[in-house]
Image (cartoon, rainbow, N blue to C red; front, side, top):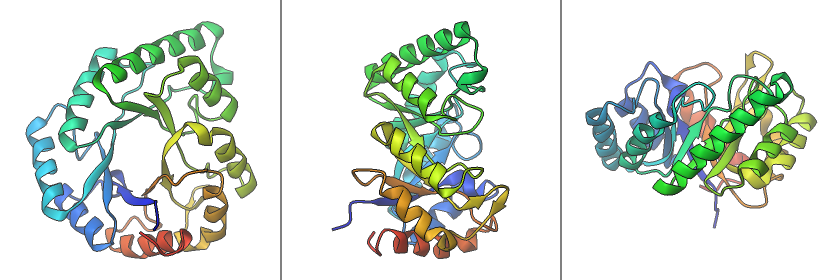
Length: 251
């Protein structure tokens, strides 16, 4: 029995409605979705959040996570409760957040201490609400290098504060694999795509690279397709088939 959970990140299709995305997700044989808070599921629009939750039931899709744009460096901690409320209505206890706007090497010592302190406070809020905050794995943030990401994870030291992983399109396969191996103990979900620099390529062309990436994780994670090589929702079934092939055909 395959233990991977396969899904989609809704921001892949910002121009489409939640119902169109849910229908496409179901038809592609995927089981879950990460809703973005920027377009599809704004945290303060609770009627819309409840409507999406009802649509999930209609299409048999669960919410893997809530993709927020909360940034501990610039947003008040009080904003977290709005995101947590929305996440729980959607049916998830995992919220993706941003790891600041600078990589560690560009932070002053004071900035790093302040960011760490804010993340510790955010983790405490998450614990109080029994949810998990996960830093986006992204360049120009604290997760750009594994050393900085791990240093922060250790400093916060909370099971309610973890991270995502995705390959950096500016690294080669070995470079991304090294990062995956380093941060794997702290990773909750994985964003899946096949980019080389600024070029978006079909996932099947990255099959061997992705098989090596997944070998870095000791237990299966939730794999979320993010972006299509041509930005078309009609391409989702092809990319979903490629993802199933990567993990051996099981869903």
